[in-house]
Structures are given as C-alpha cells and as structure tokens.
Amino acid sequence: MSKPVPWLLVAFIIPMVLLIAIGVFSYYSNSRLNQAFDQSDHTQEVILQAEKIISTLKDIESGVRGYIYIKDSTFLEPYTSGRKAIINELRILDSLVTPTAPQQAGIVKINSLAFTKIAALDSVLQIVKTRDDSDSLKVIELMRNGKLIMDETRKMITGLIIEEKNLQNDLNDTKIHYSSRVRLAQWVLIIFGIIFFALTYWRMVVEWQQKVKYERKLEQQVIDLEVQNKQLEDFSFVLSHHLQEPLRKLGTFTDKLQLNHSDDINEEMSYMLRRIGLFSTQISKLVEGIHTIANLQKQHQDLWKSFSLESVFEEVLRAYDEKIKSKSAVIDIDSNLPMLKGNFQQLVLLFKQLLDNSLTFVNPDKMPYIKVRVSQVKGNEIAGLAEIKQNVEYLNISLADNGIGFSSDFTDKVFEIFQKLEQNEEDEGLGLGLAICKKIVLNHDGEIVAESQTGKGTIIKIFIPIL
Image (cartoon, rainbow, N blue to C red; front, side, top):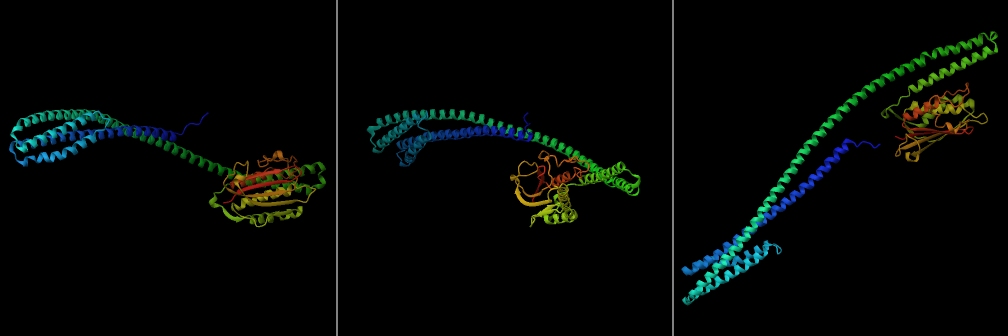
C-alpha cells in the first residue's frame, strides 16, 4: 500500500503548477499586447509621415503659385524649403514600410508621383522666371497636369492612411483582447492567492489545533508516566527493603536451627534447611537485581561527567580484590585508557557485573585469565547493530575470559532479563547481570554483544560513543 502524499507537498506542487501556468499565460498575453502597442505606434508614425508629405507638397505648390501671381521671390521660400525636406520625408516613409508589406507598391508610386510633381513645378518656375509670355499656355498646361498629379498623389496617400488606420483599428481590437486576458490572469492570480492563503491558513490552524491536542496528550502521558515511575520506585523500594528483611531472617533462622539443633536434625532435614537457605539467598539477590534495573534511569547528557576509563576499572578491581585473589585470576587491562563521558556509577556497575560473571563461571581446568582491550572504531565499520550511528566515533571495549562459555545459539538471548543459561538450581547466576549491562550500555547510546562457545570462553564487546 503506497504512503499518502503529505499535504504540505501537495500544497506546494499544486500552487507551483498553477503559478507557472498563469505566468506563461500572462507572459504570452503581455508579449502580444506589447507587440500590438508597438505596431499601433508604427502605423501612427506611417500616418503622420504620409500626412506630412501631403502638407509639404502643398507648401511647395503654394510657393510656386504665389510667385507666379506676385513675381516676388519671397513667396518661393516654402518651395525651396519644401523641395529640400520632401526627399528626406519620402525616404523616412519608405523606411517605415518593409519591402514585403502590401503598402510597398503604393509607397513606390507615391515617390514617383511626388518627384513628377516637383519636376513639373520646376518647369513652371523656369518658364515664369524667363518672363516669356509666349509660354503662358505651356504654364497652364503644366499646372493642370500638376494638379492631376497632386490629386493622384493625395489619393494614393489617402489610401495608405486608410489602410494604416484599418490596421490600427485591428490592433486596437487586439490590444483590448489581450488587455482583458492580462486582467483576467491578474484576477485569477489574486483569487487563487486568496483561496490558497485561506486554505493554507485553515490547514495551519487545523495542524496547530492537532499539535496542541497532541502536546496536551503527551503532557498527560508524561504525567502518567511520572506517576507510574514513582509507583514503580515505591514498589521497588518496598520490594528491596521490606522483603529483604524477612529473607534475611529466614536465612538466619535456618542457620540457627542447623547450629543449635544439629543433634535433633537428621540428614534429610539438614538437606532441606540448606536448600531453604540457598533459595532465600537467591531470592534476596533477585530482589536486589530487580531493584537495580528499576533504578537504572537514563540521565540527560548535560548531567554526565568526564572521567578516565582507568578510574572505572580501579573502582571495579578494588571491589573484587578478594574474589580475584581467591580465584588466582589474572586481570590483563590495557594501559593508557582513554577519557569517557557518561554516568560513572553506572559504568562501574557495568564492569562489576561483567567481571563477576568471568570470575563466577570459570573453567575448573584453567587458571582464570581476563583480558580487557580498548580501541576506537567508526560507526560505519560496525555491522548489524541497531543502535550504532554510521558517522559517530565509538570506544570498543572488549572483555574476554577463558571460562566455561556458553553455546553460540544463545548469544542473542543472554542480555534478556531472567535469561539463565545454566539449569543447575545451585548455580549463582540469576539471569539479571547481563540484562543490567544491556540497560547501562543503552543508557549511554551504545551497544553490547557477546561471542562465546561452550568450553572456549566468552568475549563481551561494548561500543560507547565518544562525546
């Protein structure tokens, strides 16, 4: 079954897709709108330039007409200036229309008519300046032809202006169309933004309410857990103190019976009394072990202290000095042990338990030999342990003995509580020592593993992160 897509991812992807689509649509519409504005400006420029040509031609003709009637050269000023300007104006008009445009043929004809008109006026002016009355009819003919040329030119320019205005009207429709599309995109963006903001705000409120509800529930669970822990501590206290006293008295009474009434006790009764004493001792140790496990709470790292591993082993060896001598055991510990950060008392208890196991389950045919070695190892070099982090440096503390060992089939079970491998009722092991060790190592964010074979000793490996 596929996992549900987180709402935050959906809330990101959908708006992003819509924003991209609206952005593309808006960009295209704006591009077409700007293009329409540019073309409209261009057509307006063509219209103004065409009207300017008509006006210049009129000025040229008016100047010539005034000179004909008055014979005053000052009337030729519009002719002179217009004749110079018309060439540039025709060139500008020609440059405004591309060679492939439909208007290009009309532009060519307008140029031809304009120059023909100017040539006719030049001829009229030349005749008038010579004051030859015999050419009056010719002047009239030239002026009549000039009028026809002017009419034709005006007609061509008027047609050009009409075409440009029609084009301008189409462009205005285009501008209106794409302006409405741009406004539509803007409104869609605004409405979508409001909807998305409202939905996001609603979702955030829901998430916040769920978070508050979860936090309150978690707070209540913490309170309940604290109550349960307090009850467990009280129970552990009662178990370790109030139950220990009857057990001690039971052991004391059995010893007194054996000592004070030895003559009245037969062999069977003596055996049963010994068994009662043994079982009361085991129960006392079991109660003490349960109390120890119940009180092994993990402290926050801020409360941990730095100390040398050597000081830990010094404390352990002092506690087990007599047992080491009684077993004639050899303890071989690395020199120059590193510093460590954690709970000093818990680590002392850890190695007390391990050393006690090695001194308890000795091989009767060998002198006990316990070797402790310490090295550093990277997390990614340790395989198959759940609590190990790949990018963390660890202290690898190994404790190896040559005791009786145990079957390799039990290496995954030895750290479970009450997991007793030996079935002998008189055996000192209660199945709590290694469970205590496991709890202490987990409290230090580490891991502990065992390697063993029956009759070949045991190796305990501990991995504790270097902080």
